[in-house]
Image (cartoon, rainbow, N blue to C red; front, side):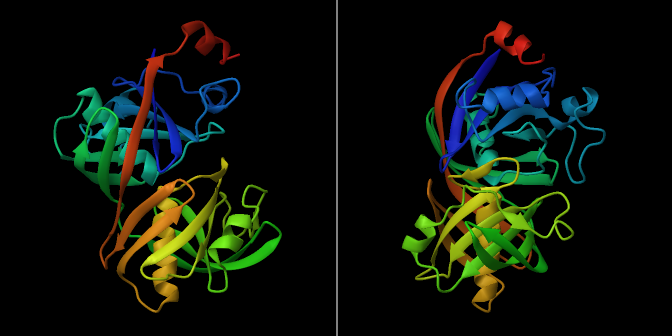
Length: 290
């Protein structure tokens, strides 16, 4: 059972090539695989398959709107084993893996997800590193919200990027204060507003086209980066600055990405790194089902 390990700005994933969607990805197996002591360790799992295969295998009960059966399909699972709609960093790693493994030869193709189609452009790729852009679709703002992070209350903007976000821009927040904030601690928010949970981003106001961001992801906790979160952060930062469109560099603990917001869609461009490939023990895999 083959796997690869990769990351996008240190948001790391176990990649499982499974063209026919035959693997049984139970919550217990995914959680064990992502555990940094008893498994490989990761923020999530990317199953590489096609939308048609996922439908035939029962992974999907229908092909998501806008996705063709022949499109690649990113079956993304959070570290706790739960199914997630979208992962912007994961799409870049997914696309990189397809190119590096020889499963895909095109520079531009579509990656399907529960959030719909995500067209990608691979600007450069080798066996280890890649530079990938993702058309993330239109990010929709859903109004104000609040969250308590690290014992502090922040006001933010709810943004739908295919998954729910609350991006909190604090004009008084310095990069040093952001670095000292306890983002890893449990966060609180209005469950009536976010009944399925929410990813919470805390960020500085834009300065010279750059914002600093940290994120607490639902089902995971703090991560070094969150691709959809950087899109939500850019939307919130631009909105706070009085504009609806523009390009920002978003710096996270794991590196930086460039986000462009237009009237029609949003684009996320950043790196991908494939650090290892190997083979999972079949016996270990069976044990995780128990």
